[in-house]
Every structure is written in C-alpha cells, then in structure tokens.
Amino acid sequence: MSSPKDISLLPSVAGIPASSDARRAHTHDHSARPRNPSLMYGLALATTVAVFAMLLGRMFPLVGGPVFGILLGIGIRNTVGLGPLFRPGLQFASRHVLQWSIIALGFGLSVQQVVTTGMASLSVTLITIGVAFGSAYVLGKWLKVPARLKVLIGAGTAICGGSAIAAVAPIIKAEEHETAFAIATIFIFNIAAVLTFPFLGHWLGMSDMGFGTWAGTAINDTSSVVAAGYSFSHTAGDYATIVKLTRATLIIPVCLLLLLIEVRRNKQAHGASLALGRIFPWFIVWFLLASAIRSTGLLPENVLAALQLLAQLLIIVALTAIGLSSDLRRMAKVGAGPVLLGLGVWVAVAGSSLVVQHFMGNW
Image 1 (cartoon, rainbow, N blue to C red):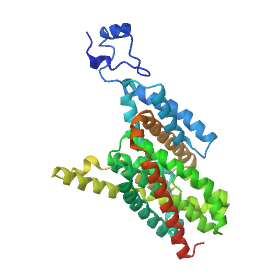
Image 2: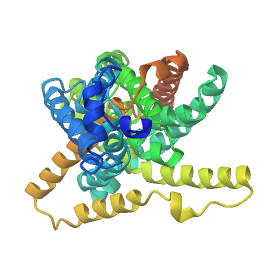
Image 3: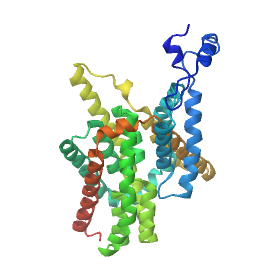
Image 4: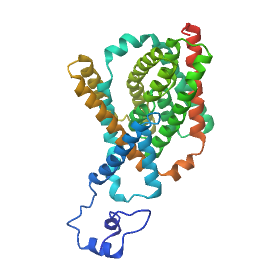
C-alpha cells in the first residue's frame, strides 16, 4: 500500500485528488516513477508559459515580457492550481535560471560605453540610490512592511526594477511571493512614470539632458526608461538609456554590500561567522566577466544579439516560475503596505533627482 508521501507525487489540479484507480496503479508502479519528481515538468511548464509571455511583451512593450510572465504564472497558480509534480522544476527555475539570466544580461552591458558617457550622471544616480534605500527603510518601518520586502522594493526602485530584484532576492533569501509582490509593485509605478514624466518634463521646461537624466535615474525598468525618454525627444531617449546603463552597473556594489550585511546578521544571530563562500552570489562574478567579454569587442554583433535574446527568455522563464510558485492568499496577508511603500520610495527618488539636477543646473 502506498504511503502518503508516495501519493503526494501525483499531480493534482485545483485541489482535486487523484482517483482511486490512479492510486492503485501508482501502488504497483514504484519502480517506474522516481521518488523525487523530475525537474523537467516544472521547467517545461515555466518555459511554455514564458514563450507566450515573451510574445505578449513584444505586442505590448509598455508592459513587457517579464511582467506578463509573472502575471500569467500567478493566474495559473491561483486558478487552475498545480500539483507537487511541478515544484522541483519551478524552484530550480526561480533560483538557478534566474542567476543564469543575470549572467546573460552582462553581455548587453559595455563597460567602456557606460564609463565614458555615464559619468556625468553618476552623482545624481548615487544620491537617488541612497534616497531609495533610506526612504524604503524609514517608510517600511513605519508601514510595518516585512524586512525582505523592504529591501526588494528599495533595490528595485533604486537600481533597475525587476533585474535588481532578481539579483538581490537570492542574497537575502526572499520567498517567491515576496519577489512577485515586489516586481508587481515596481511595475505599477513604471507605468505611471511613462505616462506622466514626458508631460511633467515639458511643463517644467527641462532640457534633453536634464530629462534624460531624470528618466534614467527615477524610472526603474529599461523598457520604461526608453519609452519615456524617446517620448520626450530622441536626444533625451539616447541620454536616458546611457544613464540607465550606468545605474544598472551599480547592482554589483549594492549586491556585495547586502552580502556583507547578510554575513554580519548571521554572525550576530548565531554567534558564528557564516562561510562567505557558501552564500556569495558567484553569478555576479560571471556577470562581470560577461560584461568584460562584451567590452573587448571579440564577439560579433549577431552572437551578442542572440545572447541578449537568450537573456530575455531566461529572465522571463525565471519570473514565470516565481509567478507559478506564488500564492495570492499569502500575498494578500501582507496588505497594502508594500504598495504604499513603493509609491513613497518612487516619489522620493523622482523628487530627489529633480532637486539635485536643479542645483547642478542640468535643466
């Protein structure tokens, strides 16, 4: 007779248990089915949904494939339901595939281009990053937002939206529903920025350089930065894109700083230092190597284009898997605090960027 543990490996949909015939068949087929489900099921599901999400993202670039992936995943997880057969593959995708996507993104970041053209915006970028994390800490404490969610929303607003959240999540050991909530919160204010920033920029009489710096430092997702920048002017769009690339490189020192904080926190909590090699995000090293390879010019443009397409697909697969693992009931228990936190941090970052530029005379 099968044990409950064996029966739990059978897939169920919407909470409907497997039939008695299926249980009897499973009883006599222990050798045919491994005790631990294969990664294949969850990976295949996440990849299939991600392809649809990527196509939708091409049709509606303002939303983008990653957001469609996480929304489709959440919809499937919380309507149809998924059995435990898919869990190992989804966990693998939400962690390892996520790291691979960050590495692949490095091939789209030229170190020379960023250093030579982005230094003018560095001071504004550093100030807005400090404001993002500072306001996330203060407002998050006041709104009683969970600690990991505060870090994710702060990082996403400070640096580069979903990509920063994806890089930070494994360092602070965020759960899938926390990552999904943070990305959804960041997305709301990306859309708001795209719709309002060009109008506000013209109303304030901003220069192309000033608006490009504002969009590049205060809007999170790259596609949203591009959309807002080129809506203002072509020159502003070019400058905003470069500022955004400069800002994206700061994901590395931010991740390393969070890593050191995590090591110190573990030492205080357990009375012993945590082995750095065990929690060090080695994918960041490979990300830097990928960026260095891109900067050498050794890879032809068609190869770089293929790697960028792969990076886009991998991050959508990973975020789709996070959506497929996210329980809306657990997210609902968090309440409206994270959304209010995202709004407060976004306003603080956008406002600080304008103030700094005003005093620098960039307008």
